[in-house]
Length: 470
Image 1 (cartoon, rainbow, N blue to C red):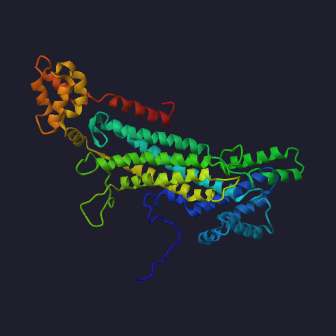
Image 2: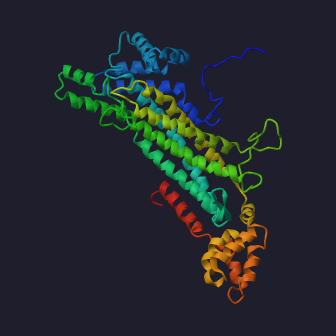
Image 3: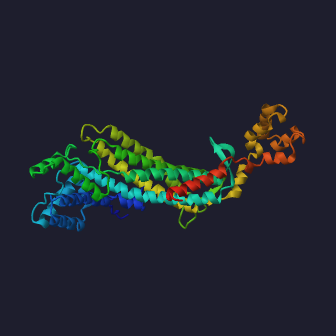
C-alpha cells in the first residue's frame, strides 16, 4: 500500500458534528491568524486616529497583512518556544513590515501584550462563529414553531422516568423544544453583544501607553490612554471593559456557558427524537436524503445520524465547559501560568460543537417527520389506565371502595385482567355513571390540560422575540 500523504491540519475526520460546517472555517487556524492580524491592524488604525501613527504606516501594514499567507504548520511548531503562536507570527510580521516600510513601524503592538491580542482575536472568532450558531438556532426554532402549530392538538403520550404517564399533544412537546432553543438563543445573543476587548499591557495597567502619552506632553495621559483603548474597541465592534480581564475570565466563561446551553437544548431535542424514532415506537423519523444515515454493512438501515451527532455534541460539551471554569479558578496573579493556555482549545471546541449542533438541529427541525396516528396508537398501548389520575379525582365516592378499589382495578388490568373500561362499567351502575360520561372520562383528548393553549402562547412568545412589535 502506498504511503498516505498527511496534512497536519485538523479537518475534523473524527469530528463529523462540525466538520465542513461554517463553524469549522470560522474557528480554524487560518481564521485565528486572520483575527490576530486584524487586531494588530485595528490597533495601528486606532493610533492613527490620535496621531500616534501615520496613515502611510497603516496602509503599508494593511497591504502586507492582506497579501500574506503565513505557514501555519511552521507557526504552530515555533509557537511552543513562547507558549503562544502570536510571538512567531508577530516576529514574521515585523520583518515583512520593516522591509515594506523601509524601517520598523513603532505603532505595531505598541503597549500591548500577547494576551491582549490573543484574547481579543478569540473574542472575534467567538463572535463570528457564535453569530452563525445563533442564526441556525433561530431557524431551527422557526421550523419547530410551524411544527408545533401543525400538531397542536394531536395526542401523544408523555413519559416520566421512561414510563407512560399522561396524554399530551405532539405540538406541546415540540413547543417546549422550541422554547429551549429560544431561551438559549436569547442568552447567546446577549453574550455575543457584550463581548469585550482585552487590552491591558504587560500587567493590566497600560503603563507603557500612559508613559508614552506623558513623554509627548499630554495634559491628561491617563484619559488619552483610556480614549485610545475605547477607540480600538469601537473599531472592532467590542465593548470597552473597565479594566483588563487577564485573570478575570468571566467573559470567557459566560460565552462558553451560553454555547453549552445551546448545545444542551439541541441535545434534548435530539435525545427525544432518538427514542421516538426507534422502530418499535416510530412516532417520529428524521428527514430522508440520499446518502444520509446509511450503514456500511446493513442496507436496510436508515440511521438517525443528525440526532446521533447532536447528542454527541451534548455529551462532549460539558467537559469543555468544566475545563474553562476550572481554568478560570486557577488564573493566578495578574497573568495566568497555564490556565489561560488551557482555555484555547476548550473554547474553540465549544464554538465548533455549538455550530455543528445548531446546524444539524436546523436540518432536523425542518425535515422532521411526525406520525400522529402512530402516536395515538402508542398512547393507547396501556389502554385506559393512563387516565387513572383523572378517574381517581372524578369518580371519587361514586366508585364503591373509592380510590383503593380503583387502584385494584388498574392493577388487575395491567396484570392481564379485565380492561379498565369494562371493569369500571361493571363496578358502577348506569345511574352513577352513564356510558357517555364514561367514554368522556376515558377520552385522552379531553385530559390535555393546558397543552394546546400553551402551544399558542409559546409560539406567540417565539414570534414576539423575533419581532417585539408583533
